[in-house]
Length: 462
Image (tube, rainbow, N blue to C red; front, side):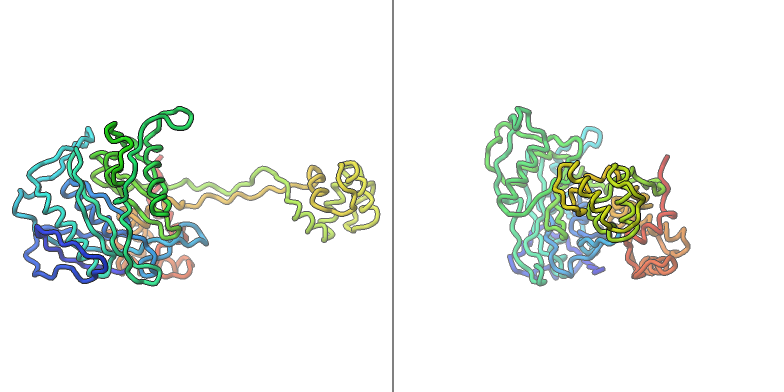
């Protein structure tokens, strides 16, 4: 895990990086700090924005940088035998001094959790929030991270900020310019009736925006889901108007939600998510109740199976038995491809209306299918930890705490439950893997390790 330790000076100035610049981070002396934010995650900039949102009640939308370089990705095993590329985990520690221009702790955007309504609070200095975000981005870039920029958008319900990539490493590890995805103009969609005369749903409207972005940039955008309560606003005065994609999405979401444009390095697609403010980690998926293996309903074998088996005495006896049941062979199965069997096959083909070749071709086997033995496939039991729960355990702080707690119960870990995979946690995972015969025993929490650790994880609630 590559670790960044960043110290932030909170100053009322916006220092934007010019394209191609890699060394523009501030080097001013760091005064005594009063506030600190420490995060760890596969997308540390996004997680830092989550922390700033929680602390100050602001709206910050985030667009991922593409993860193409080997040093920015790692393999995850969400199911056995299948490796998926995911962003590599980093850490950021941000310290700063609060601005003196406004009362400390006054939120710029105040939201009522009961009504989901948000109203601006005029006493928080706008410039300070922009400077705070930009300083985080500058210092992240100076430590080798991707180059991000920030901008502000004034909406009728108050301001919101967007963090978006300007430079990222390509497959060769070279920093290259990134297109401004949400800066592209789109036609604001309308609720007017679509196909079948039905009024377009919020999902239809949102998909319309993403399809326009796909046409503009050539990348595919998969809707990761629309939470209940999204207003899907389509102001009649804007329907059909050309606005930036960011403004269109900001009007669509309203003041209670923020946008997370996540990039999947395994398939090169963007997965836009909408999260309620303040951002909360996804809830824990339920632990599946283990179920024993069982047999499925009988089903026929494919023709190729019988054509292969007919080369063996056992398979030929089964084919002859089918001809006996069909009434075309009048002798006991011998397991040999003899003249009597060939004659029976020809008679069966003539009676079935297919070419009389005397061979066990595909059509003949299909016609004999009703008389051939069927097989009952074994349905494997559900894994003790399914892929959805595994992903949650591996990608959230609460999930990593559960892993540490499970290792403690199993007798392999005695450190603090911080939710961070530090040296001690990795050593505990490695020891657990060795004790349970899980190769390669490298201290990485993979799918096989999750299955063995399942008995020590929280039990499903009844």
